[in-house]
Amino acid sequence: MQKPIILFLLIPLLAACQQNKPAAKPGLTAVYTQAIGDFIVAANEQNKTNFDTLYFGKRANGQPDDFPDIELPATINHTVIRLVLPEEGTRLQNQRKQRVYINLMGWVEPDTASFIFVVFSNGFTHQYDYTINYRYNPATQKYKLKNVQFAGPPFK
Image 1 (cartoon, rainbow, N blue to C red):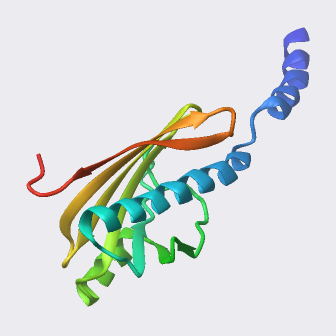
Image 2: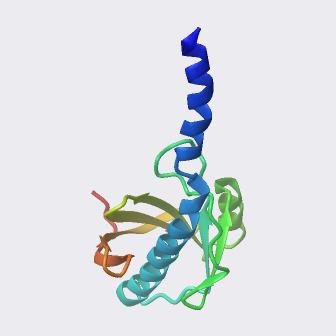
């Protein structure tokens, strides 16, 4: 009879000690915002492109690289940011081929963060990819840009 009583008392204690997932959202928002800002700067330098609006696919396929449940600022680096479902991205590309749709995959760990920006335009034609990597700096408690890698056609 002692085991059910111990379990009954232990379960609330374990629940109280668990880390609260929503508390991580402000940190995720900050690093995703930073990555998008760094992407905009890198793409403007590499491709001589000035974006007015970027459409990001808000994928939720149950995979580790799905877009997190966060709210991004309306603008980043003077560029309007819109989160859209992938089906909406397809519709938007069919309406206006010069729109830029990005499939953003991210992996945020305690000491590193990595992002891949897969860029589509011209009626959903794969334009280029950017990989952006960060290392966490405990002194500043922020992610610091490690490197930016560009891959354009032909893709390997």
